[in-house]
Image (cartoon, rainbow, N blue to C red; front, side):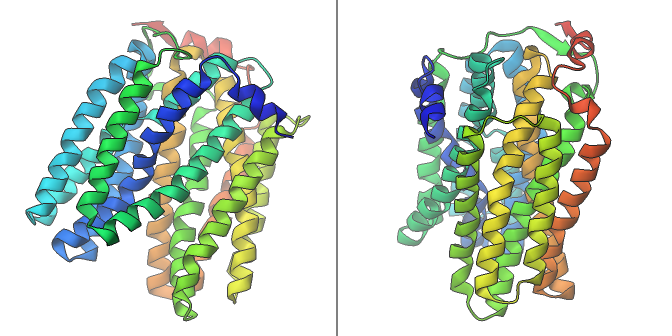
Length: 406
């Protein structure tokens, strides 16, 4: 079963860029929670901490695609090195301001800057896989590997962050993140093996890659997938607290992550005969059905089961989306497209958490679980409505007409 993964990992130069990329991506998974802990430690206000964390999460979703566009045009190294320098300065400034107990407004602004300048290493790794394996049957497996890596980072990062924060302080935790992101990014940028060649082009549209057929549909679907993560974080935390078993929240969410890990591994070894557009519609529909079970969960065991089923389905949906976008776009704008999808998940997480939080405050804890089935169900209908536009290669010639030499 693991033969396909060994084949992907055996690609020339793969380990040379994967290992530093993993180190660089851990701080990305630490940033939002780290900002939340840091600003609360500094100001004593959960309100200010929540706004700062949201700013740190939304900013990269808005700025990331522009960074990806620059990487496509000028090369990953020429973008990553100055970006990580600016990010280190912004995060360092945030640590200094928090230690000095500066105003909440200044902390929110600098948190947004730290988020906006976070190196888009995840999108660039996917662009390298597409460059190395594009056109082969191993790209699905490579993207499955990326999904597994994402789960690892988002599982390990909070553990590392909380351990350092409680043992020392949130300042030390984010200082460790700063060292990791600088070291990992610089080593990753220095590895040229597998890096796409710079493409001095631009998309003839003010909306960039989103103007290309099918990409906006995938971006909306990824926002819906992001709402699952955000709303479940709020729902599981609030519902377990209401049941008097707040300590169960972590293990329940871990069951979601663990099942996603397993789902991603299994998805990557299957030789699929169903087309990717249909697979995306099916996985979104299954995810909507799976998360309905959470709305009916009235006990801790049922929460475990519902979270595990939802997690098992969500990784295949994400992998399919990344595979689809690679087939829809010209190679010249690959990194920007992956950055749009990454950013869409980030926006969905923020949106899902915000909506679920409002529902919990106004109507009760169980209402948070109504967000995922609604958003993913609507996304499934959207994908079905635009199924023809998502066929890989079907409209790539027209897409190339929208790309011109810079």
